[in-house]
Image (cartoon, rainbow, N blue to C red; front, side, top):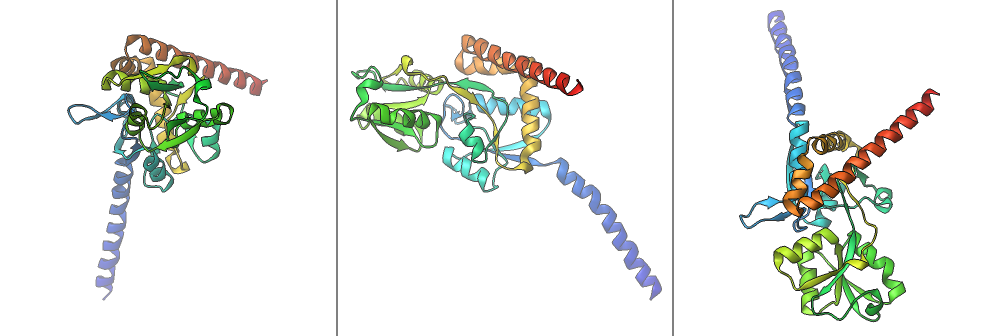
Length: 284
């Protein structure tokens, strides 16, 4: 009986010891689940070959390679991507999400900015509307939950127009072309790419641009802080080694890449100087 008991105890101890490396292996092979939009060209979209591509897609891939982590990218749509993160079904979100105080207050935690984008108003190419003053009593289109929607809402009372909300950009664009709305508010680089690639008969009114704000990678839980830290570290590295500029140039051209890279490097320099000042203040 004692021999049988000793054998059982030894076996239990052996199993217990074996469980440690298995758990470690599971932890090392973690795959982060990242949600994104479906149609937000040139940041995320499906190309003619059926491949999901875009600035966000390439930046995420480059950062993951730099930092050595695995991920699964789920194309869900804007609202569904947010909902998946809030429900714990995704660890983070990259979808051209503007960094705003309102979003921070509602539970978003952002990375460093990776692209500064303005919002502007776009009309049909044959439209007689030239500015906000022409919108009184008319209806414009926006994409639900976006910075473009916030921009339109901030102007609505002053200029007296109505707003119709859409779930995706292509539907909103068709509403402008079909006359259901007289204009739409959208991120300027998205609108420019859509007009060019889709040969849309639409015109961006550049004098309606706002100051804009940077896009950021977002998490909604402290459990994803490690992922956010890796994103920031990887972003700094790909800016420094030139990969970032190559990605922007691929989708927006060399001029846009130079501007975006300069802005990123300026932000990095400003953050470094701020950190040095803070350190000096503490040591003093």
